[in-house]
Image (cartoon, rainbow, N blue to C red; front, side):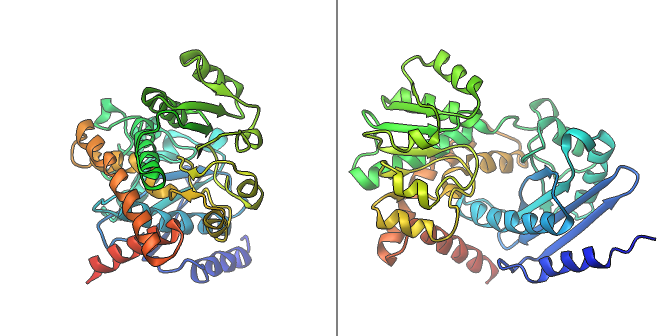
Length: 362
């Protein structure tokens, strides 16, 4: 018999000493037949069933997986609250390299685990999981979103995610320059995958000047072929230093805003689709001290979660688009609260979300 005392102790310490705290439920899942090892974390159901995606990732150990699930679930509580959804926050992680261990048997087993929670947690796609995977999970679990249209879902959420970021950018322009139009503004987009590409189209349609970069040359090529007027630079380091840059839109990996990038940034607005853009909590103050307006990432990139939440009620694109358009007003409200309280916009967004959850518990 294998001694797992040490590993178990690490997991328990992660659970009970989490700095974020306040989680309602954490479920450790295992299915020996399929090899499934997963963690489902429910942070809050104050506003309704917890909603959040399933991340499939080769974590170094179980404690790391638990920590990620806890942090991601908490983030979803705030995102769903600010999006005005009737959902709390949850997240699941499946431990393993999806390229090596993902099987239909494993996904079906995972679906049974989610179903066992009786609707307290609603799942969707995330890093390492895709629409086709959710179609499999849904065979065992009715509380599954992110499915293909052929299986009752809404399909790709990148269109509405980009639309929401665009609305957040317009709100930023309204707050800073007194006019929501982006015509004539120079916008730098870092990361032009599905969401970034759609965002570029919105910006060009409004008459903005767009400069892009991506670590994948093929992604840059696709955008430039579709939109020949778009400029390009070698990397993010060059993008944030572009002369005359008005808006910087991080749309790739998290942690894009760190001490070095903020010090070098020429833009007056940061508004992008990437999750967890702030490398550490002090960055938001650094941005404010430099007079750079930051539109909180989890507010402006909520178009995707608005879409998957709508699946539960019979997906309607126009209804979702109308909800995503409200990101404009929500972002303006955050800036107003930040000014009123004398705090950075990220802190203001947190306060508003926390108040909504607290009010729901009364």
